[in-house]
Each structure stands twice: as C-alpha cells, then as structure tokens.
Image 1 (cartoon, rainbow, N blue to C red):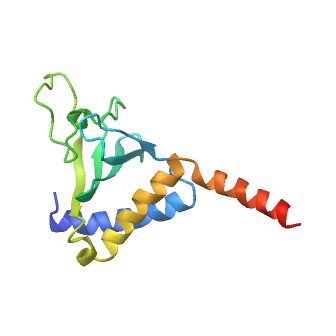
Image 2: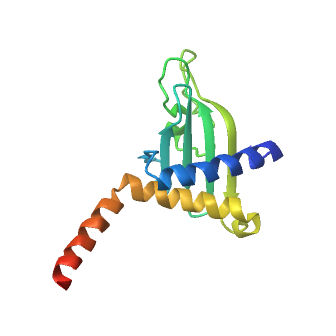
Length: 152
C-alpha cells in the first residue's frame, strides 16, 4: 500500500471514477462496519473480477481495487473485522477466498491537502458515492420542481 505505483495508478483510476460517478454510470453501495461505526465506506463492482472500495474515517481516507475472485463472491471478508486496510480477521477459514489488492492507498486527512489533486478527487468521490447511494440528486430535482411551481 502507498507504493509509488499505487499512487500513480490510483490517481488515474480515482479521476475516472469521479467522472463516471458524476455521470451516473457507477452505482456505489454503502458498507457499514460494526466495529468502526464512524467509517464511511462504499463499494462497487468494476467487472466480473474486480471491485473498488472507497472509505473515510475521522483520521484518513482510502481507495482500494481488489480481485473479487472467479466465483463472483466479491465480499470484503477481510473487512468484516472492521479493518479498513483489508487485513484478514483472525478467524478466517482455510477455504475462504480473501480478496487480493491490485492497488490500495490511504491518505491521512492532516496531510491530505499536501497530496494535492489525488486527495481532492478521493474526497470528491466519497461525497459523490454518498450522494448516489442516498439518492440525493432525485430528491434535489423534486425540490427544484416544487420551487419552480411556487415561483409561477
């Protein structure tokens, strides 16, 4: 995690995900952690073999693309323990398939602005994912229509 390769590739992928999410082409699913209730986390399938996860806590934000496995399970079993870094829980069975990271970064909020565009895009992506999962845009459109009717 946080290797030069991860930074470079994550910056490109996050930028593309922001655009696709803004255009409504990507659906993000909220994933709550019972161990870390303050964590905001969203997940989406990218294709049959890979998934993306974005998350944010009070201290840091992160991005991860991982192989979901040939069986299509796509479960973040390693996150059931509440570990945002994806470390597997202690009670993993030998027959469970754990996801393999393709790229993964974590950015501390205190030093985030120093990271520049990648931090801004990651935080924008977290907010866009929240808005799409909460269906905020259709609600705002309804309010606008209502206000337009009142203005007449």
